[in-house]
Image: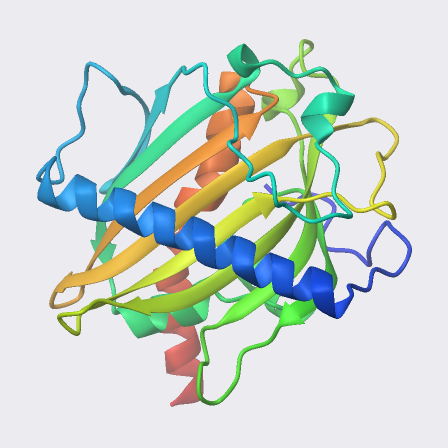
Length: 276
């Protein structure tokens, strides 16, 4: 999708205080814990089966499938979200009926460690590489790095980003692009039995310096994907997202950018070949 390429930030330089940094880390930890519980429930109680009465299939790519559900619930942001933040939904008078709730499940070929290297994109250069394979947005920028990968935790990252997604086919009804300011977090969670899952988490935040941009509608999102090695060269994927404005076309496009990581397998394979 990426038509305009990646750019420098469209906002003034963004820096966060130590207090805000810790608040974001705590926010990610709490949400990841909640989403991991949903994943466990899906595996243990639902036996990895999607309830078709609650979820409507909207899109598939290879063995990955996206479903949509309308719900009265909103994004469910915690009241303790950053002091510097304000809800964009309040600015736009977004109601619960405007929300799109999405579920993504399936499998794809690959190894978890290779996939996590593909998912990780904490810098502008790594975003450019990822975008050349996944093409999941029209424009994007890194606003601030909060937690950087380390030798001890190479997949642990927390970054504040901005991205813009154009309306599908430039439809007359959707004349403006949607844009999002959000935290992106990646990491590995180890279970008590020694098994582990990788995760990719996006969640909208606002700061005084990240105000509305001309000709764009500021959206809200909360999206989570987790990945588990379920067999040789086979990764299981569980993902869920809530997006507003909730137009179905836009919601599915955003879900594709969050869930549609199968192209990263090609990226990691090509990178491995380049290193040989």
